[in-house]
Image 1 (cartoon, rainbow, N blue to C red):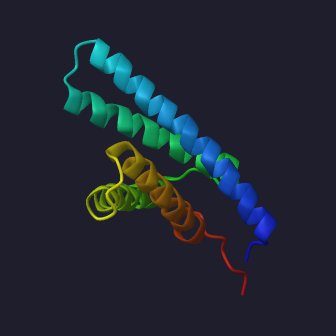
Image 2: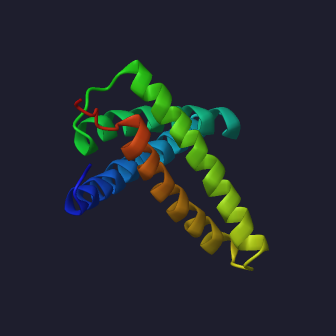
Length: 131
């Protein structure tokens, strides 16, 4: 298994790759929307580009792994779990805890980020055990 400093290093690197992907997603959305695309297709397309960028950077920079099709499928499903966690936590924080919407969203992002990191560490890019 990983030592704690190694996990923290990966967590920090994951923060950087996720931040880069978020900039790609938001920037792509802004460009597509300004070019006349409706919100839904622009958001879906920019999300997909951001997901690919996130996967490629995370595979190489965070986990030092080769990017594969199987890895992307696992990564994408982990991202969908993160989306579900993000939205659920956001709604719960706003409705149950009474947080303002933006604060609730930030809380949802934080919880989902950590869940996604763990899914990537333990499933998507798990280290193969030598027998």
